[in-house]
Length: 318
Image 1 (cartoon, rainbow, N blue to C red):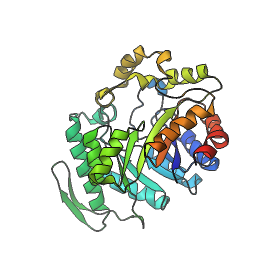
Image 2: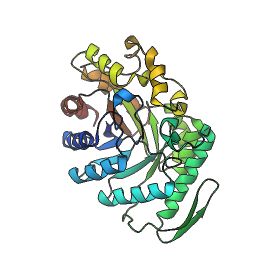
Image 3: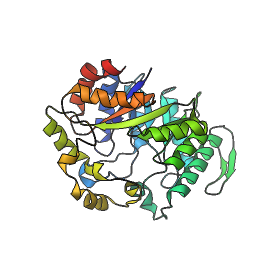
């Protein structure tokens, strides 16, 4: 059965709100929630960016069966893989059998904060692959050393390990990353149901592994209100290509999205009160072959959206 998830947008909401929405999502019948891991929001007006591991710890205490996933963590520059390995082991111990560790090669927006050089995409993917190997090495237990090209670990032992280790899903926005996910990941994460990346993933070792697609929609009482929400909270939809990975500050993003036009929004995501347009978007991703679909509602009307999904959407796609 296809699983349907709810996106917890750390860029827009504070930790207490995110915990509350996770609790509501479980009660509404969502199978899992994915939470973003950022140091900065994309644009300053989004207004938040809480530390994901603290938020996840709180969510673990107010939910019982809801799956949780980082969507996604970059364990390469801002966060050393040895430290991330400990964080994931701890949170998995707090929600046994419920956590999926989603990883990606990151964005300059979040990873530049120590002043490190921002590498090109192929190198970032190599770093991610090695970081995943570091994490898995430490999860073996006992005292571990690691001598890699990018990372070195000496006499490190994670004492608090879960009985069952979490799977590691790797995010992809291009063929190199999709190949890395097929070769090294336990699953694939993409945005927008990119079937060509799913095909590459399956051909490079991911044939029998799960795949996850994150989609954005905007529900509101009218199509105009839905478009207004996107324009206010997520004008980033105008950005194409690799720019979003390489831009270093919120100010740069704010300059870039000045060209956003409301009339372009409906072509990028379903907007409005009609449940069928949202159901069709979900089913399109299911038909493409993805077995986990995560829905991000763009806007501040999260409680109303969760109730809408409970009544109108989830019964049609589960």
